[in-house]
Image 1 (cartoon, helix red, strand yellow):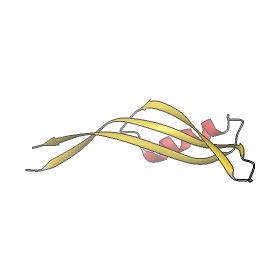
Image 2 (cartoon, one colour; image 1 turned 45 degrees about the vertical axis):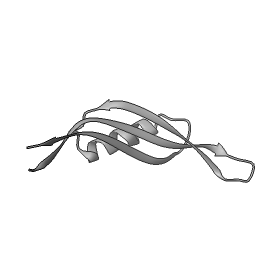
Image 3 (tube, helix red, strand yellow; image 1 turned 60 degrees about the vertical axis):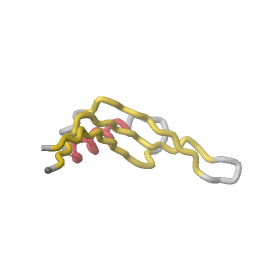
Length: 74
């Protein structure tokens, strides 16, 4: 039996640095955007993330993408 993974949903998270703590370590927050088309190309998602980051008050520290898959056996 073969196992198939089909992408069904995706989310984009922008990691932004919101400041520093008392010891000078950076503090991060995540801004989430759900219902991203699961079949969207990674480059396209990245380009949108960079454009959205330009609208934020905080500097961009990272981009994350989570993809949910449906597993089926055939």
